[in-house]
Length: 96
Image (cartoon, rainbow, N blue to C red; front, side, top):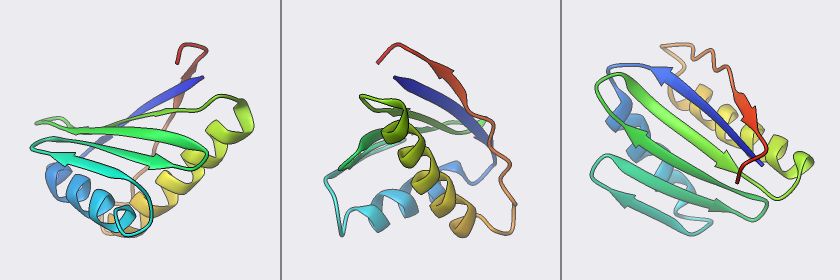
């Protein structure tokens, strides 16, 4: 299962780095120029920063795990980007 969203912001690289560094203290994380991967115990989040904003794709094996991954990533992004008040709309698909 998979879900995607885009947070439109000019600060995408900063939020990408902040999220990856934060989670990197607790779970496996990969951070490259413009992209990252956060491996939570219940799901994975792939992030990419570009001129439009921060693109997030989460995958998990089942709906409850997907929803938990979305909840954790969203809550952290909302906290780190509170000045911009992110309003994320997630699109869902069965593809992993």
